[in-house]
Length: 267
Image 1 (cartoon, one colour):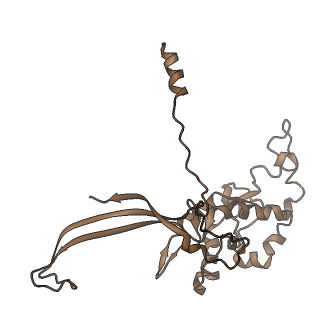
Image 2: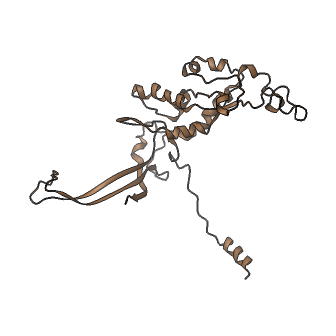
Image 3: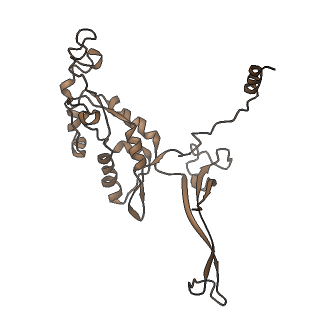
């Protein structure tokens, strides 16, 4: 056979591997937990993942002053012509989309939940949090302002910001929530556990229930980390039909655990 025939045969007999099931039943793998506090270490902020979620989303924001021209000239405003006035549009170098100010948005997580010793119980509660849009000029870096601003939480709650941007419809305001919601969770099922285990040799005649550094000694140590996942087996026939049996026991008792990865630290 020629090299070309060999290549065709290799491709023909190439094994097929089933891809990883991204969306397993009740799985939260890959989702960001809204309850980022670690109790009792409330000073630790695990909000980095939420910054990433907000960073990937943009918001529609059209100030009232551009209500008439934001759809003119292919989005470049009045005065634009592709041939005679390609740079004369009123919205030239102005964007009607902006980013989310993560710091101000996350402040509401603290004031609305954590400062009250409460937690998010469902990812749908993100809809109760006001997404704070950034000033278009600051977000785009353009020197020409588009006539908008970065609101405070109070201005969002009072509806003042929406009054200043009345052209944006409900679908435009709800779109960021629709994109963000499936990326969030309030109940993580994957945990990375760091541990250190030691082998202790007791001194002769010492109490095995206590540690005495003068007589006892550590003769071995193992340091590492393990990724543990809590999951539900969808093929488990013992799981009741919760749609018809409202008095069924909680699904928590059907969770199982599996070790996904173990790594030893050996510096």
